[in-house]
Image (cartoon, rainbow, N blue to C red; front, side, top):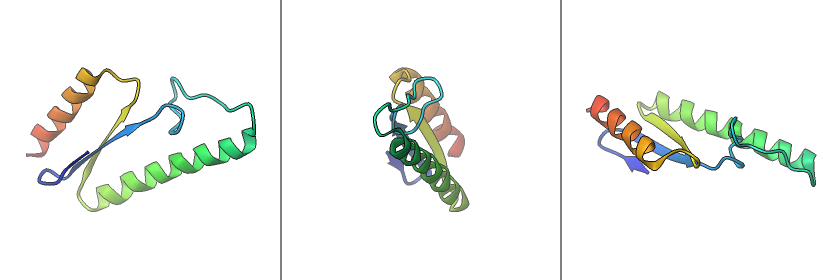
Length: 83
């Protein structure tokens, strides 16, 4: 989700695909491939965050397990602070 006027980008990250520290799991089958893939996902996420910040954007990352209400509150707060 993007709020262009406020330069705020919101990502909803899946716990498995983005290696959530609370809920991320390790694949048992083809473990080396998946470990490499998930590490690359994390690197890409950090690179994306960095590039957006350099362009003047703020990034919010929401985990899939987060309460929608709490996530919405964080987003609303950032939108207010960026205005």
